[in-house]
Image (tube, rainbow over the protein chains, first blue to last red):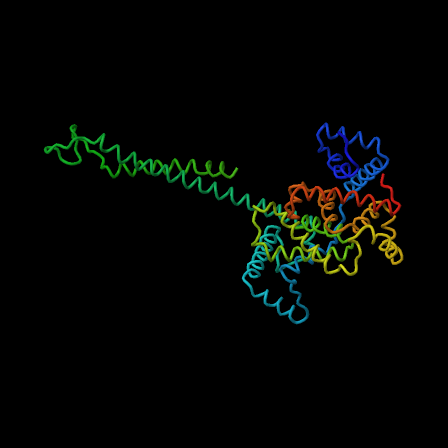
Length: 228
Length: 167
C-alpha cells in the first residue's frame, strides 16, 4: 500500500503524536523517505510543534486581577477629605473600638502593675529594662511570700479546729460508755463506796483545759514550722 | 483566581498577539463568567473548559469586530502584504521581541486563520486533550484533528516564508 502526498499531509500530526498503527506508520515512513516534498515538510512541522510546546507562559500584568475584581464586583470605595475624617469618627463610636480600647487599657494596667511602675510617681528610670525586671522580680517574690504565709495560717487554724472537734467527739462518746448505771437507791454524787463523785461538767472542763494547754505548748512550734 | 486569570490571559495573548488587547479581553471573559455563572453545568465539562469556551467565543467576537484591520484569513494571498505592512510599522520593542524565535512563532501564529489558530493554541500551547478541545470548539473530533494538523502545517509554511528555521 502506498500513500499520496495529500494523504501524508493529512496524517502528519497523527504520525508525530504516535497515533498511527504499525502498518500505517511503516507506509508513512516509506513515503517520506522517498519523497522530496514530504520529508522537509515533516521536519519543519516537527520543529514547529517542538517550538510551540517549549514556549513558556506569558506573565499576566499584575493589575489584571484587580481590574477583573473592579469589573465584576465594582470599584472599591475610596473616600477622601472630610468624608474620610467623618468615617474615621464614626468608627470611634462602634462597640468594636470600645472593646479594643478597654482591652488595651486592661493589658497596660496589668503590665504596669506587674512591673511595679507607679503612675503617681512615674520616673523615666522605671522604664529601663533592668529596673522593670527588678521591680517585676520583687513583686513576684512578695506575692509568693504572701501566698505562703496565707496558706500556713490556714493550716494552723484548721489544725486547731480539727483537734477541738476531735476532743468534743471524745467527750461525747466517753460518758455513754463509762457512765455508771443509775440506781434508784443511790443519791446523786455518791458511789458504792459512799465517796463523792465529781460532776460530769467538771470532767469536761478538765479535758478542755488539758487540750488548750497542749495546743498552747505546740502552737508556736506549728507556727514556726509553717513559716519556715 | 490568579491561576485562571493567568491562563486566560495567555490564551488571549497568543490569539491576538497584543498585551493590552489580551488584558481587555481577559477582563471581559471574567465579567461574562461572573454574569453567566448560573448557566454553568458540570455536565458540559470542567469549569476550566467552560471558561476556555467563554474565552474562545469572546476572541472570535473580537476577531470579527477587528476584521477590517487584519488580513490574516487567507494565507496564500495576504501573507506577503501583511508582512510588508507590519515590517514598515514595527516599534523597536516589537522588533526586539521578533528577534527571538518564540516571538517569531508568536507573530506567525497571529497570521493563521482564527479557526486554525485557536485549535493550535489549545493543543500545543495549552496542552488540552482532543476531547476538551472538542467541547470548547463545539465541533467533531475529526474536525479538531484536521484543524490542528492544518494549523501546524500552515504555521511551518509561514515561518519558512518569514525566513525562520526553528531548531
